[in-house]
Length: 465
Ligand code: ATP
Ligand code: MG
Image 1 (cartoon, rainbow, N blue to C red):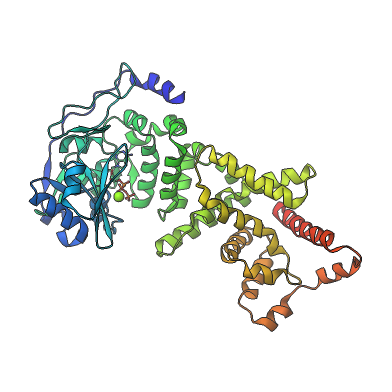
Image 2 (spheres, rainbow, N blue to C red):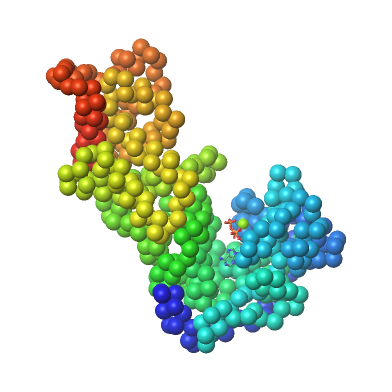
């Protein structure tokens, strides 16, 4: 619906897509990247393709990152060979993807992604539906892949800094669109007409935010200006693709800067619809800020980060709100917590397809929270033995740090988990024992249910502080 609406609005009066670009060859002595900085797999793949008579370049993020002095995550190769031609050259390779067919070539532990030059599948201005590609020099059409020339491949990429081609054989960079100057000027410039390019693929707006934060560069005015108006287009992107992009953004090592920027540009509505509400509450804002800062530090120190923990954190204050509402309506604390969790995740999934495999960690982290408030009897010992204790404790600590829970409880667990047997016994709180004495005649199941609810209400009270 919205997609069609924007198509109608923007399909008129579009400026023509830039004409075929002119290449500038940048020698090694100017750009400084030697072939030793290219991964062994990418060197091997480009060399084998050259030997077989094809052209092949290292492209995209790797060259951009090397020019910025960063360590590339992976090395992608672009070639004029078709996926089948690439496949026959490398024994340990396979063709992947239905819409865009790529070849994954394995070399030792490395995996090199090889893509065939493609042309842009531009939108026909009259009909609003994808039109046939431009004329291509080398390209062949296979399924719905539109192969193209190297020049066309340059034009279909997203930003100029991502459209640099490095030839390991000559150590030259081919720059068709001034991407090299843009890197030096720390400027993120979109290729082609911004509105049309975002309309073709709204995820490019998220990529702009992520790359700007990760690379510490400015989004060029013409690329930044349309984002506010086009943000609703994200609603048409499949929820699974949005999840992948959101995860990349959250795991970029700059998640806090990205989320702040997403919010500033109004892009978060289609991703985390409640973020506005959460960030307007001081407790919610502090909690999410701490969680993201913590994640960024872990990524920057090469420590593992759990996506389940991250989404549990991003959604926690929504769970708290729903939980409080249900209790205010008379539901018992623990069933209310359970329903609040299920409701929050289901609502979120309408926008962002958080995979089901993350449910177990997200639910465990949330359901273990009330148990950190029971610090008497055998309960703390049982909590220590839970396989997800560590993640739940880290989460509880964030809640204490953000001011939602008294820090004294966090400190208690910090000491308790590492103390020896006698010290642990000495640390147990006494008051619950006296409570137990007051109700000696209660039957066991009723007593335990009641104790559980009193733990949970405790959490409620502190959460409302
Ligand atoms: P990083 O790997 O750091 O996330 P990257 O730029 O390498 O950044 P990839 O997703 O690996 O990102 O994409 C490789 C290249 O493919 C990009 O550099 C860009 O040229 C092109 N590309 C990726 N996504 C898009 C898109 N949505 N539209 C146009 N081109 C894209
Ligand atoms: Mg990449």
